[in-house]
Image (tube, rainbow, N blue to C red):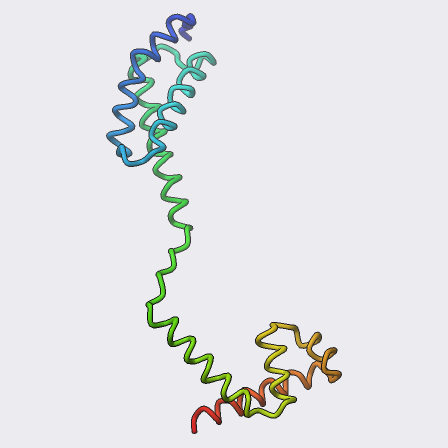
Length: 166
């Protein structure tokens, strides 16, 4: 047998059980989680909807009914949070202060060797790596085949490595 409630009885239920639900949610989730109030509101709205839709049959007390809904919503909330955290990317760490200086020195070091490269190789390196143009775009600018762009870029890298080893 489904039990029906009047508007005043529903208000009394909210008035009586909201503090209990709030306490249970805060105790389960912790007060450091700012979403606990949203969870309480969701539970109360869900409870009232179920009562209005006749899902509360009166087999148990209203307190037991609300307690069951509260427990399930808390578990759902924790599962959702863990699922989100499981797929969240790890925050990147701050680079060490000396990394910036090392990168600057490395750039000066490479620039010095780039000046010693043949201009046709230097231009390929500049367009392909620094301007980040595609092989096709570099080929159109220089007037050579895209295959030749790759060959020159590879050869230029080999020359740079060879110069840096000395």
